[in-house]
Image (cartoon, one colour):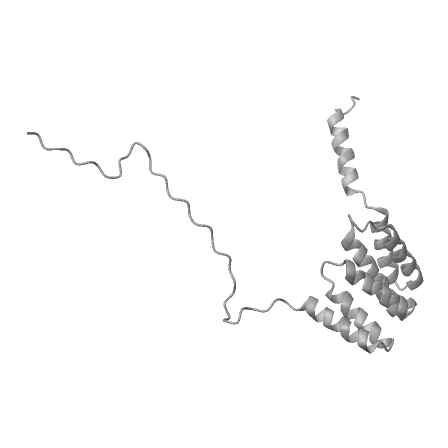
Length: 168
């Protein structure tokens, strides 16, 4: 049996490396699964592990998700509201769309009796969740279409024949 060409092996190695999941992403998935099946303490441990392992530069959204899930697990199933508030605030600071993290943080802050902080977090949630307002005239802003390029005329065709002088 002959060996496969070297380029095939290199391509397979590159594909495997691209599909490889980071240890933090694996821990995030395991934490979610544990919380979903009701194993709150196991889920919290795996989600905390994910938050420690995920790279904030390359895996920022996954890190925000890990803190969000950790905050929900602390608040709902197996922890303290203080820990939940810290995790949810961290999620909001990392997420591209932090509205839900702010909203849950406001809920937890309210349960802790931190009314002023809860009001601030609710305002931040509403700002993050509210779409931009339409213009006052009701028009929908649309970018103008690019101008059409002029149609080229073939060089061999004269658009208007020149008048020929009459023979004398």
